[in-house]
Length: 453
Image (cartoon, rainbow, N blue to C red):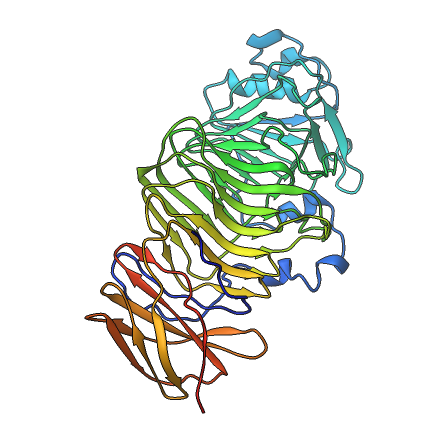
């Protein structure tokens, strides 16, 4: 039976399941926190998306052959074997540029004519429900300083775009996606809006926005809406860095996003997945569904999880796992959780995670662990300078001070040996709570006790 975690405001956790080492507890945000400040988002001065994308640290789009799309039509003169811009007619369409790039051996750079795709007045390239786009390798598509909207058509459109090694897409607004974008090993998508036009605004089971496989880079600067933001369901995993889920960093607008990142599918996942420096205002920020094998490693580092703008949503969760998982999962350091129903909720029938150096504010529940392998320690006595209690299993006991203002902060640590522990250090608040970390993982927070005067 799962035990409920304490309320949480500024909860700093430092646990290491692999070695029980103490980590310095100084939460930080290494990315530009002012860009995603919840106090200023709503009043942020709106910027054209192409201008915002141009401010991101993404490499230049250069190629031995440079093409410029100068029409919103989707004509394809020359057919699927088109490889010469001179054969594309008087205007170069987006499908023609993609086809030429796919049929050339050298690197191709695709840009957009500012007279057609002005940043202040974006133009739309609209595909029908049926179209055929080539897989792209060694190609870059650049909409920075422009206004480019790609509409993939109806919900179950067969129009798909697969990015393979050395492909880069940056600065586009991609609408009506459902399975259409796949980012494979060695490819990158950055500075793009994906399903943020508000078409879907209710909880629903709907196809994902973007799928990714091993060694792909998602970010920086993408903004995700819709049911699923990024989905990992095949063999390899990737890096998701510096993106926003459920709101627009250029305008501060909030929109629907049910799952920011979903991990799991029909195949057992392996490799290393890094989720770092993102901001989630999703109903569930990261959802571990299934399929993490013993050869998988997941690092969730320096992200921000916040409640979005819809007060009618029944539950807001930072990170959750509905089923057991294998491999190594590290939650932290430096994740921030605020105003959620539950910060972390996990089923630990498989591996035990490492939870290290996170902060939590104004959450109804801090950590909820089902099938937990480690029993929380017991505090039998606590004073402003000393605490002691009992424990099951050798490991590291972490002490936390809990204030009357519902703030839980790290105080210090000691060891559990022979079923008991003693802590000599300051406990400066009205109550105290503790956790135990062993080689099996981390426990939930213990029942809090009053600190005697």
